[in-house]
Length: 430
Image 1 (cartoon, rainbow, N blue to C red):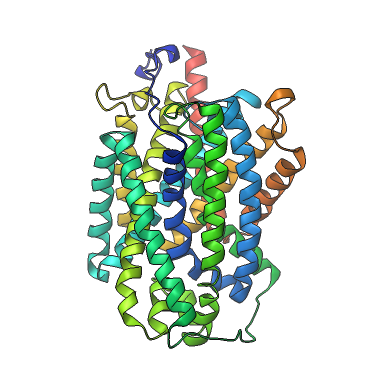
Image 2: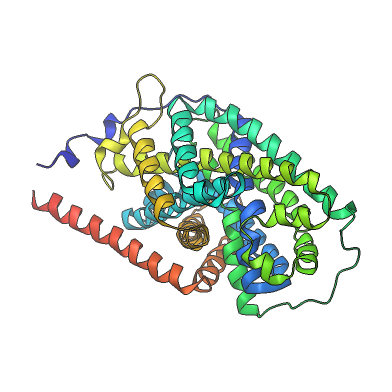
């Protein structure tokens, strides 16, 4: 028999519950803040113009619907794996696999996006790939040493990035080059607005990281739902303020022009520089570097724990379910995730991985919404219409993503399903 089937599921090693509500909130914020504020407005502006503000509102509402589903499910199933576990338990193994595989591929792409964002803000063009590789290796090492170190570093990173956002907002509003009146600018088509919402959804998806902490938080039935909703609320408020820096997307659209916003590798830093207060640009650069590093730190931890949960069910190699005897982390999974991310940052570009990441994460939340919709009785915490709207919204945003992201995403999902089918057939034959 293959080595894939030698470890019984019931021999999985549990992890210690060390984290409280504030820890979980900070880790969730660390996973969210780096994505949206510092990188995703540029591709959204390219397809929607000023309609990206409407896209932001749509993405935030769908994220809220998804967050209520994740919170409701996490209260019922307080274990690592997130919607991979929820889908298996509520709908069946294939649903769980589809969610878990979509999460792994989508969030691995997110890891690459955050590493490339970090490198884009801090390094010249020729050094961006080596710097991205180094930051991935460094943060895998931090995660390897334990989840409490991840939480402590996340607090520092969130504080630095939030400070940078406040500086950027201040400069955008009162700087000498700030625009005082909103101009009449192109809105873009509704298809472009929906596509921007799909891309901007990338900015809100970090709260799923909290659900993957089910085995590491104290009192998970109470802690996880609270932490998810608190983290999402804080992120929405920050993004609403940054919608003022996306009204610096209106400032940007005036002072830099829509083409420069759409093509900017560092849109927020360019926005601040356009106001004339150049002293603030290094502050934004430091904040962007901290935010993207924080998101990468949380993402590596989240992907590795979902991979561990899938390995426990033999949907991925059993070796990935190993938990380090001293540091109590899924160390094999973290090392593999880090290696794959290093390959991605060496071979792809930032905008390509954003679209692909959104595809995988939206499929993940589609399964989460359907799973939550199927819950009954005491397990139900929110009305069913929220899950129905969330599921429909995920489908709409998926089909409006850039076609190359959809085609490539469908191919990778089918490849994963084909792998599972072959594995099951081999297991049944033995």
